[in-house]
Image: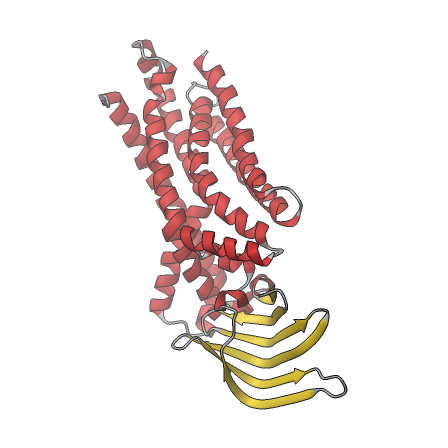
Length: 361
């Protein structure tokens, strides 16, 4: 049963975290608007589209910087408790430091469950809307978007390969399409098209500038057409950039997609696994960062809240740095994705245990 002190600390925990979100998210929106406003005006983006984009942006941004927001909020209000000697009064009443931590752990549990559900269902949809807007209206803003949507090459079966130079997820159109069918080591035929557009009504593809070259023993057979409608074995997701697909799938869809890609022997499987494992590792980090924040800020220091916040910001950005570095290592090296994704939590978990022991003393 929660006591008055438990409810007081829990209320401070959750309210400060929410306030921190509402303080930093508008700053992120203002920065994004200042960078994108010219492009939006040039493309005459409807206000409704912009409103939806920034709704998705808020969810995407909050999930991305979730560890920093949580860590700083706990540092902030715990430092205030320490400076007002409230923590000393609580511990002097006979409450142990472990018992004092209970409302913090409860608060971390609530935030973790919320973060877990968001990562499973809400963030993928927001990420899809966020990416769609960038591809539709801001694709020419820089080279980063182009790299994410360029040069998609996939093996769709044991003897079939597809390639597109660029894919537009809004219009469901791919450019410079080619499909190669092999028989053993020999090319059987190759289909190319300037553009290929997916029709969701009947799951067919409309090809523009269609050419099919069938390899013969003496002469090759060539078919050409301005337009051609055809069904293929591959799915629309096979034309989508790797990172884009992984970030926009819910938990069930992502698991199914990984199984399918693993059977195909996809070389990008580690990228998908990193996205999957992070859905679980980020909520767990709420407990670790909460313990570190309380251990760092529960003592009254000569530098006051400023010193606690400085230490907190350093640790928070170090955690995010480790998370990004090991995520990239999992995607680009032979390091197992599961280990790479959980290393930051393991390292900071050990730090949390050490700081908590010292805090108890």
